[in-house]
Image (cartoon, rainbow over all chains, first blue to last red):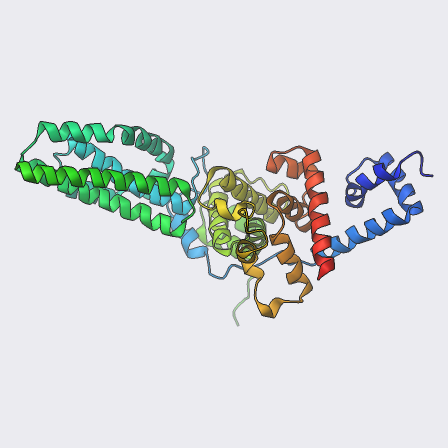
Length: 225
Length: 190
């Protein structure tokens, strides 16, 4: 028998034995057992046959489309050497979030009484935003987004009660609604591509609730005007 | 007659790319996209997701090129980076959660699995030994598939895999044993 190694012990080590991933001394003991044991020998042969098939798998598979144009578009705004680790978000999601976050934060700013610059400026500013700077700020933006979203209902209610019946306020709400619609469209586009993303779905639901709330207030404002 | 220049070596391309030369980086992309995409595809089993992950991996490679010091093959560095992108995406990103999870209850071996085997699907491929193995790998449970793809297809060592996946070496061994057992059973039935 093989230097005291039981069949069970040897059997449990066969994968590592074939892989050469056990210490030398133990290798010799397993090898001695395998030589004597037909069952272990057959098992080793079966593992080796599988590995031989795995080795024949192609190491390279080309994607169906050329990814370079998209990669080039992204790295066009990034330095080759990263001095510090940037916050990483998957590309499509990051862009969608950056857009949605920028629009939403802008909308929240307008709704909470900081909206006298008007929606068109906000949209123009958003269009001019560089995605790379958004990527770098994604973590902070998303944290702010969550925080701000929590207080949005109250902000809107306060803004509305302070300017009830004011036609200008009504126009502001409509501008805000338009901005939220843009944010919804951004998230929807991301969601269509990643329909199983529960976070995106949750965000979309939240935006829709905000939109519905704002719509209701717009209707009330129109009645008071 | 025009003098023909030898194509630039990989070292030269890397050096130029590290200085910000995008055309050199494009050449590196062309040389290595197949290897990066293959590992992403086998780990995530979805062609669209694998394309997105490959793209993310190359963008990250560009950002980190300055850290590549020439130790080890560039292709290996890239593939390792791609594996990290896949694992990180799995940990932090819910967008592709479905393709990394086990089949939903009641759908074992059903539509989910057929979809998972999509890139290797199709009647024309039936009976092809390589395709059979690709399909069988795609149908493995996630943990077993990761370890099999990393170890038996891509040649990573147990300890490396444990580090990449954040699990114990013992877990790597048991998942590999499980993967091989399932694969052999599946392939021997065919």
